[in-house]
Image (cartoon, rainbow, N blue to C red; front, top):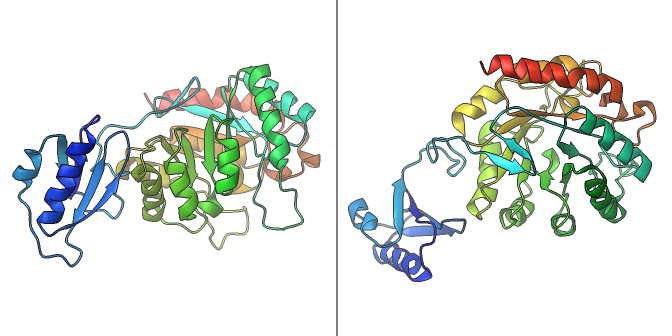
Length: 335
């Protein structure tokens, strides 16, 4: 069972609950968030405790029984949908569009794309500063040099930005500057990075691993939630299958499934899922109709000469045509 303490419960009240559980011969794990949560289990212990006695303890808000292996991300834990605010964008309270290049390459490219996506109505831009690449010889991003560029883009355009942290060091560097930190597919089960994200006050965009089940994605989200950061957005970005016609297989069924299983917002990345810009508009429109909370699309001013993933990036003109169609389909699908 989970014991949820009231927001603002005193340290003395928290310690008293912990002592009560331990004295009863049970095991517990403590997570610190806006409110402290205790996960209580036998785990070889033989003790028992009466729930009514726990509820009488000062500072206790409620007790939750959750059968799924993921706890804090589950719909059993929280019935109401979570809304995550990133700048002006409320993810989970409508349909949001996130757009931008795979990687920021230089100042001129970044500013040109930022101004274009803003003109198309986008308020949250993506752009890689650190890029984990399959080949060690591929462009790895501007890295430390890109942080100053991120600040300039924010000043020039007023946009909010999501960018990827690839390890704890890059997370520390990016945290003061990014509006949202992304944990990519390759790092979905990098547990130390997830723990670092759990201590942040910045929203986290958590991408599904290339071979991960939905249960595994939600347990990864629990790592972030259990440390106190309740601002998590899930992202489906395609999974590895036997297919050869696209880079990955876009699992659109994950959207309604995750919305059923979890209270966290769900967005989809059709660019990485398909790996082919020809397929991105159709898949993005399908995503808008699926009940997704948003879509994240790669956009580039010159895809043919992009330093990373140009084959899946839309041109600025193609994105300008797609954006209003996405909004219209999303409005229709939501009634």
